Image 1 (cartoon, rainbow, N blue to C red):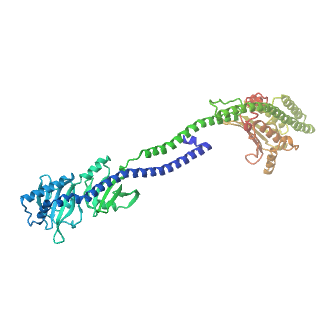
Image 2: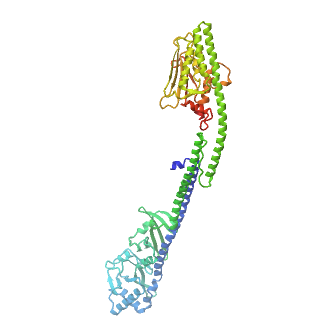
Image 3: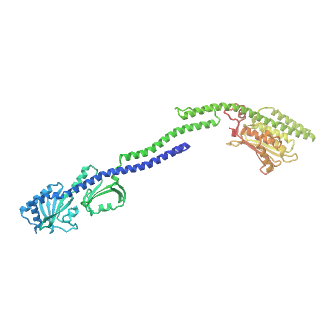
Length: 616
């Protein structure tokens, strides 16, 4: 299929243009796809940026309002004194009335915030209490020194794992919590006295609710971590320290907005982190790149980039198959006309396109060509017939001169019987020559050749000859008297009167399946030198009617008659015999019946064949 479409020059040019268009389309599609993909990623990540900002804003709002959270405690002298009494008590034992005030105060604080799920009270002396909202009780815990350092008079965020490290007895009020730590102090003699720390415990469910309310698929993992990358909140439940730090340390492959594209464990991720400088924490999200769906524009662009070249190729194939069929029809028609079938006409296609115009012009050309060729054909037939007849009749006087010369020699030598016999043979041959037909069968030509050999044998008494024609070749035609000059040439120029064992061979070979009949005339007379052969070959290349020399006239006559009838390839081949002696003439002609040859010179042959071989 492709090979057929590539045979035409313009088909190749069109296909090259399609390839160029496809390549340009592919390059621009690739560039546009990259831009659209980048825009799609940016828009997709923007939703996660908003969520990360909302989570950061929620935590910042809680940190900013933390002082307001404890305002009821400091604004209520009774509650404040009860709390200070707990922190200053050496063993933590309080009167029931004070304990009730503390429990009511803690309960009011936790009830004021739906995400506050408990309190931790840590004194400077290392006593730790947990307020349990479920049982509304204050539970003393065994405090364990940790690596976390409390800083007086500074708001601090305590992660889930850091809270769990404060005491082995601590039971978290929720699956994951974080704490906000503030300092409990009192004024004493114009200075502040640090009594300990109050830690409000908050559930991380607030950040999960922000993600849930967004309506986005759970494809990214959101993380809130402090400056040491200890996890405060993780939407994926991974609270191991250091994971976020490792991801942020990965080499950046690309950036889209404030998100960075990184590779980790063979996968690609988009990671974005927002640092809250006022309170010292990070809000980040990690989104696998494969979780970002392709946009409609990307899908549409891919379809266009694939369908456009495919459509061009299909259109190219359809158009060139249709036009190629019409072009092949025109070429086939030209080939038929080129084989001299001028009566052939193309079928006019439907429609009014260029091919229909070409078909009309082609048929009109054939009409005019047939008229002109018929006129030229008849004129050339007449001319060729006249030329052939003139050349053929020119043999007769030439032969007659040679025969009479031999009879004269016999008469002078007193050999009247031979002279009389030669006159008889000569009269028979000229009776045959009076027939005006130009072509005879090979069998008839061989019979006349044998008469000629008998005529000349009177000159050489012991001359032997052999005439052989394949049975399959005898019925085919040959110009009349074609072999006569070649046989005569052997007796006149080849044999001498005193030569003994003279031998002449005439053969017409036509093997089964062969395309041409091969004639060979060979004698064992005088040999021609290579220089003489070359001179004869040069004379054969010249028109016989344009020369007056006698030497080589017979060979030129036969050679030109062969070319005139059978084409340029049917020419004489001159050489010496196989053993280097004698003289041999060969030629080949196509198998054509005598009547067909005669018809071609009478103007009744079909088509415009003026001769055979190269002329056909």
